[in-house]
Amino acid sequence: MSLSIMDRLRAGPVLGAEGYVFELERRGYIKAGPFVPEVVLDFPDAVRELHREFLRAGADVMVALTYYAHREKLRDVGREDDLEAMNRQAVRIAREVAREGDALVAGNVCNTWAYDPDDPATRQAVRAMYAEQLGWAVEEGIDFVISETNDYLGEALVALEVIGDLGLPAMVTLAPTQPDKTRDGYGYAEACRILAAEGARIVGLNCDRGPQTMLPLIAGIRERVDCAVAVQPVPYRTDEAAPTMQTLRSPDGERAFPVALDPFACTRFEMAHFAAQARELGVDYVGICCGAGPHHVRAMAEALGREVPAGKYSPSMDQHPMFRADVAAKDAAFLHSWSG
View (tube, rainbow, N blue to C red):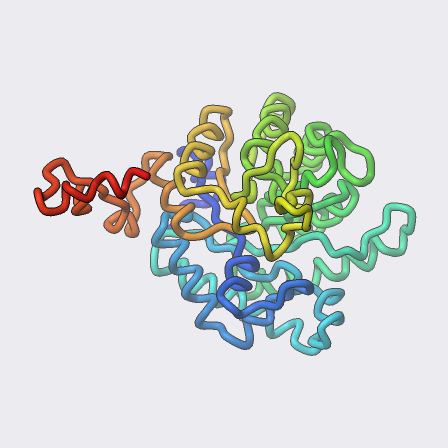
């Protein structure tokens, strides 16, 4: 019997891997803009393969690809009739791959773009969307639920309510797009404290910010809550001048988000350093969000002291003909051209 999410957290950091939508867009299976995971029905093998790559890299959780697979978004692309099939299939694929290793399966809901704190009617509309998504997920078999990329504390609380009704552990993370508060005016640490008080087992931040600009916010959250804390940054080099991936600009001033972020991508070594920093801060769920690749996840796993299947193929530069200690004489003559 696989350990529960709470048992795993008690045993040490859990490694999460997300960013499915961005990675599958890069591979040509998802349309940038709407970012609706039609791939779940149209190319299920592509989803299955990415899950498998994350599993081999060391991810402890297979997150069902139901991000933006809610009624509001599917209506935008004319696939509302596929809502149930898409949500059920996503969980089935995640479960299939999770069984190939020792991974848990997480149901997933996210920001809906329908919530308006000034319009009480939208709260019920959002609740209905979450209830139908998670109802199908529970029937297909999940271990816990991740509610993520929440811009509003109010919307996150709606998700937490639905998850609580289903009797499952909840991980609820906020999207730190704004400098220091949610869109409805709560400081991130205070919002996480409220979520924990309302029953969330894991709270924290995901998406928008890279490691450098997310970790300071996480440190404040870790000080305010007693429950488990999660951090899942995007693997992009955000900084004080451009704290989120949405604010990154090319040298000529063009917006990089969402499909020209490549020049800002973190290396595997930077993400490994982040994982070690997160552990030192006392983070319990160390993950990665939009832009993640399996090479990032493997490096993070190894930084956390894991031995993973994909580690068999981790870099070994001492075996490279030009970097090894005993470079052949015929090659050594050309080393100057490798040094710039």
